[in-house]
Length: 126
Image (cartoon, rainbow, N blue to C red; front, side, top):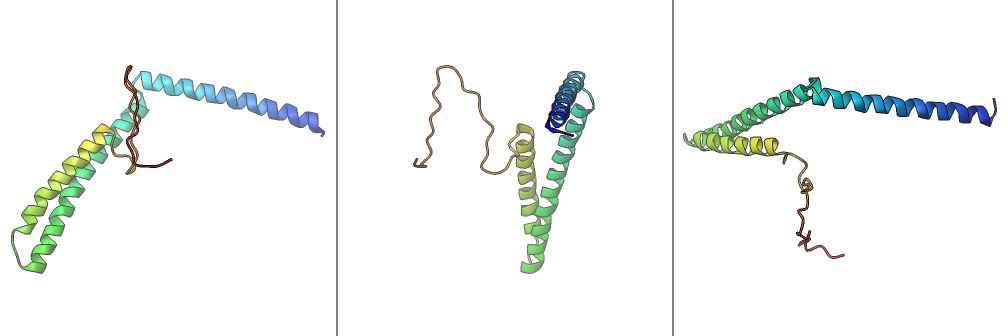
C-alpha cells in the first residue's frame, strides 16, 4: 500500500461523510416541517421541565418554611415560604418559556434593527 491508495480512501471517506451529512440535514428539515417526532419531543421536554420546576420550587419553599417553623417554634413561616416558592416557581416557568433559562451571564443575541447602533455600555476596559 502506498500514499496514493491512502489518498483515494480518504477522499472517498470525505465524499461519503458529506453525503451522509446532507441526508441527515434533509431528514431533520423534513421532520421539522411536518411537525415530526423531534418537535413533539422538545415540546414534551419543555412541558415536563415547566411542571417539575414549579412543583419543586413549591415543595422546597414549603419544606424550608416547615423546617424553620420547627426550629423557631412558630406556625406561620411555612405559609410565607409556600407563597415564596410559588413566586419563584412562576419566575422559573417564565424564564423557561421565554428562553432565558440559559447559563447565568449569557444572553441570546438580539437582532439589530435598522438605524440603531449597538452600543456596549459595560465598564470593561479594553
